[in-house]
Image 1 (cartoon, rainbow, N blue to C red):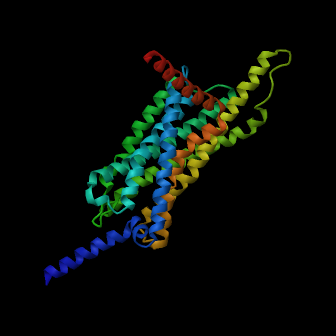
Image 2: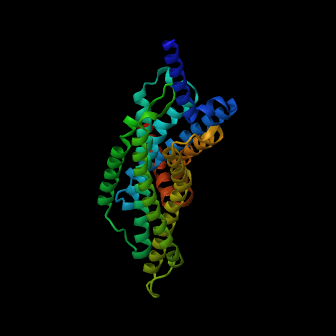
Image 3: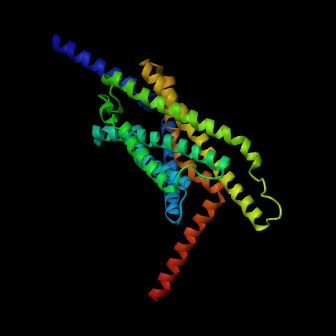
Length: 334
């Protein structure tokens, strides 16, 4: 009898864990076509985001004298590549109900560690870009050198790895077969996510303040230098217009990041910290909101290509050089 009671209690515990995972309602209470659509969205994000961000990295490597802004853009692309390459396939395996067939719990921890690391690093880098663009628009110069920006980006990623490392303790395969949070470490999870929430709020407030301070300066973006200087005046106008476009570009990157990553993650952190059973409908909504960050992963290269003419020209010259090199190789082989 006691054995039967123990078995019943074990089944109940497994079922509770099973129902508390966000993946449960998506996989079992939604049409199969919905899951296929989710897979198509993630696949599209990978199809656009991986080549796009690799292009950003390749273009950056060809810049002879990169600026502080260039290094921030480079590290943002690296974060997006890591997120798409690791988290994209992981989510597809989870929602395909095949995760626990062959994926050990270590990879569940790695999945969340990469996701949190890329998010925190991207948050700090986007804030750094806002500070840099504010200085450029107000003082006509970047506040730090390219070398210091390169070092800042590397340190930001290393610190983000440290902040994301608790995932190896907090996340594992659940008894019901999902990659999710360990319910037995809810208190530690609340503390860690409280730190994440503090970083998110401070970073986004600083970023918003920087861009709000920039807005009045856009009126003076095309202000000319003293008359009678001819070519100097034209060069000044071109420089200011280029700075204005670069600032708009990075401001749009922040807006996309804010609505596809920051706001959904803040919402999820608050819900998780409350330890409240939100029900099937809300769980499904939260699940979808947390996948919106894939938009941010592939949107940045599209923003650069559509607004930043310098990036377009550099990308075009990169392909032209590749084409010329292949023609030279073909002729030499003859």
